[in-house]
Image 1 (cartoon, rainbow, N blue to C red):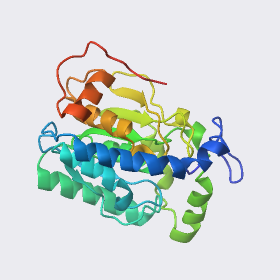
Image 2: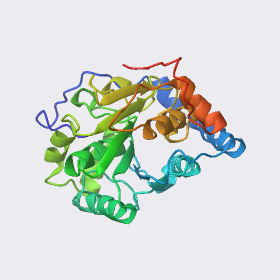
Image 3: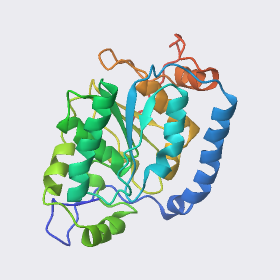
Image 4: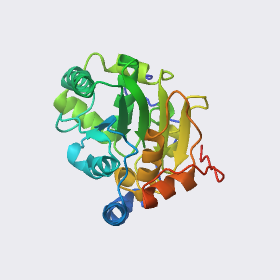
Length: 276
């Protein structure tokens, strides 16, 4: 991502990049994850657990709404009003993005008339955190999926792309202030879903600090596949269904039963919290 904590040429890095083999197998893993979730959605019943609640989904760096289409289709099957960001390709912290994203959020909030859950994949999760600081009274909750928000994880397998994009597309004068803001504790409920076998980012940079209003869930997934991996989508759906005013711990048994049977159910006897 962007490293503003050191002079140019120096890097504040604690967490190493993922092993090259994990990066090399990203495409192969996605080729299994995407069709698996599509098939699972095709053969399992839908649900009304979403109750028409709005969700804004923000794509990762250099990605578009097309790459989050599988995730949004899954949420719509669960009766969420899942919205794409409609801002084209995510080129990073440009002036255009910093002006347009809050406007897009405001449009979703105005059209749906209730607090909006914001789901961000990868760099999109950092933008979701920023939105929560900008619109705390209008954000229901935030879910970050493979989002390296910590300064210790600045260097990822896509850092070179960020640097080139900043030259080609520009970097807003507000960028450093935005990064400072998104790294502060969130004013809303937040969940981090990440993979310890992520081939792009170090999972430790995605994990949240311990606290009453945040939760970490690890899933076996590629980085790109977090928006289509069946287990990642099951965890996402379970967390979006919780009441932000009375949140409970994540339960794999409940989440998987919901995925297969289309009902959250009430049995929480097998609660499992997977955290950093």
